[in-house]
Image: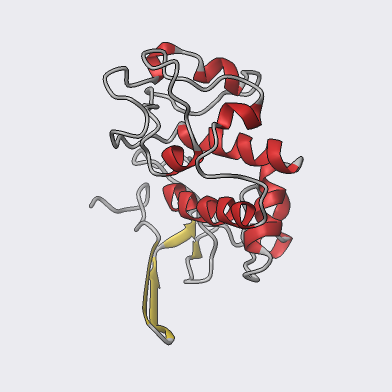
Length: 202
């Protein structure tokens, strides 16, 4: 680990807990290098793939409400085709997408750029494992989760970040968000900066 004026100590937070709740917390490093603000255990930070777990809670709330089915062909909900080109007769389901068994594989850049339709992105043959039928093989794929979010939006008629706030974050009384517009101003002010290894702001 290299530290110094250009590369100060990275923000680190450790929280210990048991069945009864939090037992200890420790924080070190800077949440904001420009302002020299120290990180605290309560500062919000981007949780990356842990958000998949939170998304799954939202999906299950909709399943419980009868809005979604785990084993239904997602193409029927979306109105556009989600198919592995090597297995055109095999439906892709939410259960498969959530468990990374849909056959989708991550390209080098798995996000769907602004201005590009999800349907067009998913239709690209290079995004599919053509050697395994959907539901038969595990392969971790981030690209499946924008598809799940699209399914949730289509079934609910609600924007994904707002839907997740209503279904999961608000009931749990979490001042958290999938989009800064649904976080409080106080929370945004405490956000932890993301810094790549070259020291730039990520």
